[in-house]
Amino acid sequence: MSEQVKKGNKMGYAPMFPLILSMSLPAMFSMTVMALYNVVDSIFVGNIPVYGETGLNAISYAFPLQMLMISFAVGTAVGSNSLISRRLGAGLQKEADSAATHGLILAVCTWIVFIFVGLFAVSPYLNVYGCTGKTYEYGYQYLTIVLCCALFPLVQSSIEKSLQATGDMIFPMLFQLSGAVTNLILDPLFIYGIGPFPKLEVMGAAIATVLGQCVAMVFALCIIFFKKNKVKVTFKGFRFELSTVKNIYSVGFPSIIMQSISSFMLLGMNAMLNEIGVTVLGIYFKLQSFVFMPCFGLNQGLLPVMGFNYGAKNKKRIYSAMKCGFIIALVIMLIGTTLFLTIPDKLISMFNSENQELMNTGVAAFRTICICFIPAAIGIIFISLFQATGKGMRALILSFTRQLIFILPIAFIISKVLGYENQIWAAFPLAEIGSMILAFVLFIQLAKTDFKKLDEK
Image 1 (tube, rainbow, N blue to C red):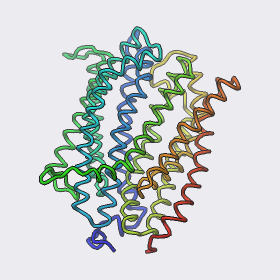
Image 2: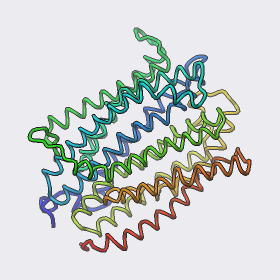
Image 3: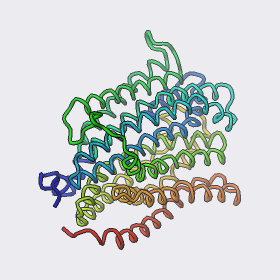
Image 4: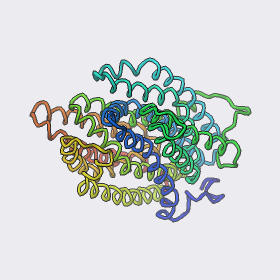
């Protein structure tokens, strides 16, 4: 048994279901709060007089690039999280601290890349979709501001995942909450020009978003540098090691690809949809985040537990964590499926759309797409297992099939080859079912190889 377990690290001995709940609930709440960023922006923008629908459409076009930025933030941080938790499980405190410090440095380096994206790539990106007039203006303003200020979510995400790797889920939740509340308060002030604030419309939504992210980052920096934590970020005697970077990105890079696949999937789907379809898809992805984000928060609680016990060679607890994860994820997805089936019109109406064609298209789309929620829950838990055990490539393969290899060809065949454009939404559940089958195959391979080397506890 490793020194960390001997010293009483709860991830190595605590009853599994209460442990998963205690570690996941704050992260689930945190991720749900994170979903508020885009949803709140869209709701307020959708209510802008005269140009509300145009602004909503512009944000829908901007969403894939914004997701790409978030993909780099979360992906790199997940790589750090996995490495930190495995090193802590093996009792390697100094190496865990080094991984956390490397993660923060990599976040800053990634920000420099996105400054160039924000300055030079936004206009060509919007031109590809033929955006003109107010749609182009709103999209350009929103994306330029959000991408050039990517430092805030990148640094905050790095610190958040470093703390989660130690089992600390409370402060990461508070980081997200502080940012979301700031965004919620500032959105109407900057969008509508309330009181002394200027009326900036969509630009105001972007400013409110980055200010909220800035608040969360400053809070996170204070906690990591001035509070005693189980992992420490320090530059005293620090040496930048390519081997550590490689270890981070062995899980982090596949995670970045996994996260960014959604961006490319949206790009492909947008190319097959008309303007109404693009707006419906944008609204769906914002609303479905309230279903999927709690599952991703669950993964944040599962990942360090499974990673710790993989490092401690405790196969029994890894399987126990998986079982708890499946139960909780399926309950979440069942609730989401019920809501999307029964009240899709009420969900769409929050965005204040009076366009009946948009409403009819959205209701049909929501009721079809939500069939994918249950099989998606299973795939998400398996992805977390592969990440926690350092098998990032398996997680990458699974995500590729879910959101690119399966869904886009299926959507193309349904809408373009067969000519059933109104049924394009069926590509989502069909892709998730195929991905779920592949997930079981990859897991069985893992169980027959790596897991056989682990000691039964």
